[in-house]
Image (cartoon, rainbow, N blue to C red):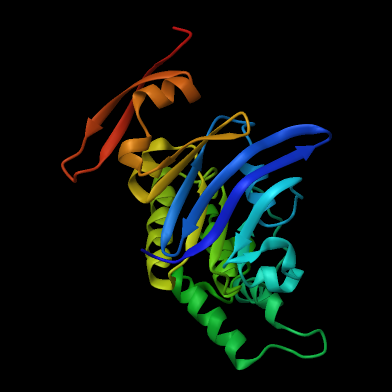
Amino acid sequence: MSASTLEVNHVHVFRNKKLVLQDISFTAYEGEIIAVMGPNGCGKSTLLHTLNRSLPYTSGSIQVQQIPLQRYSRKQLARQIAILPQTHMVPEAIQVRNLVRLGRFPYQRFYRGGTRKDEEWVNAALQAVQLTDKAMLPVAELSGGEQQRVWLAVLLAQEAKILLLDEPTVYLDMYHQLQLLQRLQTICTRFRLTILIVLHDINSALQYAQRILVMKAGKVVACGKPETTVTPALLASVFHIQSEVVRLKSGGQAIIPLSTDEN
């Protein structure tokens, strides 16, 4: 079995005196993609920001590479975990390459410029997302799908082993969604990463994730292999929809939503 990179045990999170994450436990491993799914407001984004230490947890434990999360300095943690939030501002007129260079901040000192290793990682990140030919263009001139790939390159340049992606496909059309997910799958294998990705498209999760973590009302209600975790009974309980499972020739499965429970 691959080495564990992230261990979450009985974590509780309060915000404004309200319990928003309750008794969260799971382990993530090197070289796997975990899709985080659940209804709006169930705590998916809160979970990612807690893992990144942007939000504090009140009880339980989180270990990154077998070291307690709180023992890391901010720069040390940035070498382990990189996060792509739902929204991100692009600095005005910045070129693709210069934005990707920002991913090297955990390794740089304020009194010295970039090193040869920094440039090697920037080059590798651009190549991994296939944007080398657009490195000198302003990010604002790229399509939405290309911009998401630039942000993915920023995370890769950060050289972190754990990537937290909060709905990176939400504004993309079907082609660019598939393209991004395929690239994530390739990158995960190539760099032996751990990727937690919040998704709303159940069938994308079934196709590209090794495991699916399902949340409801701040709790983890299921976590396991897609083919055994995502069932019509689970979708009825969590999302209040009636659905049907279709077996694919590839050996996988797809979910066909039929109706909501209100019908």
